[in-house]
Picture (cartoon, rainbow, N blue to C red):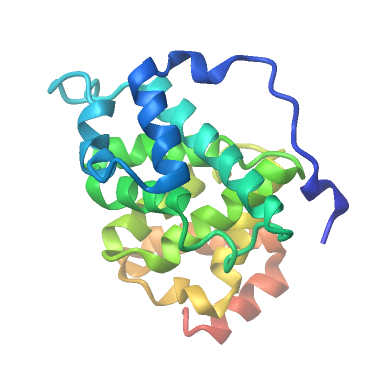
Length: 223
């Protein structure tokens, strides 16, 4: 509801400069026409640079890809007279790319991809708003609990450090644990061990306050 979420942040770097020319050309073509049809199937191999664990992917290219697709998605939604939301970000070439990455990448690649999204969860602006909706949408539409667990891990890693926490990170995590639609407290990974469950409860209380966090956890069946 903040007016600032309609304002784009200033980006002073040429972040698309790391994209190979042919890759950028195919990306732009896919965003406009959803062709070439092989773009999605080739995406993982285009991002991979080696088979060495821990260094398989081109991190700069992943970060640039996520930010570029996001900015193009925001412009596309605005051109239709809408604003980003859980309903307006769906069924587009932009979300096709993000959902493909979430499903097709291995654990290492998906972790880098989700962190690239989390990097944009900052102060109130149009990028924060879009990527917050995107992270929540990927959680809701995930075809395996492993993806949902990894999304939770990426957010949690940034919340267990000392304050202050970025505004966008907080509102995304609070929405995830508070909105019954996500069934967050019903997931097995939340209750896999007593110390993990206590960690989630502690972070929830830190983000929302003890009373509200307790109400949310009790209302969704968490102990």
